[in-house]
Length: 255
Image 1: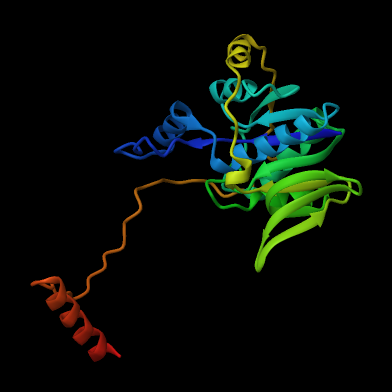
Image 2: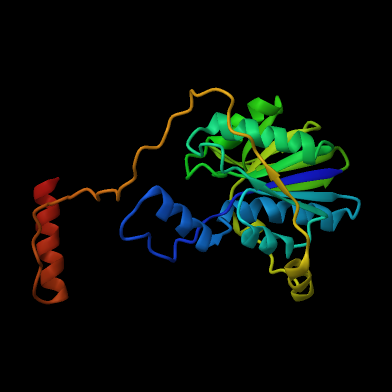
């Protein structure tokens, strides 16, 4: 079985955003501090676990990021890895991103029976690319998947359902949207694989700009303003018993 894993990375939240935000500054920041998101890690770990269970499984990693993050992903030793250059695609247009990814999958991983992608792939946390990609691929879609295991009847996925965990049988080719969970926490790569990844040749695939001019154009960016909330409060003083009595009076008055 062939598996394709789509990875985009995020700007590492440990680093503060530029003091003067602009499109160029944010792009530079995201490139300089690129890291795997928890959902990228979950998608990759699910694929690695399937290969552990069946050595015949082959993994193709498609990384929509710069060479540094692509080389980092190569440290987990996918069987094939490509860097996707999506600079020509407006990332706030999920349909355009999905079309580009669909084309990349057809060209670079045509035999992939499963496509794994993190739940917030490459659209600045909108979370709409995986669903748009399933439509573009005309493929069944499973969201919020925590893990996949092979059984006698095929592949079963465990996902977060509205009422609890659900187990579903995967019908042939499918798009699996992964979410993070302690059970799919990404393993550490072997040091020898990390060293090999530093010397690996990373082929790049470049997406073409949309043929039409209907995509929205980004005009500017600015810091979000945190909402200001105010509420009257009272500082309780005295012993623990006095504070408890005072709090009880407040609660009785509010009841």
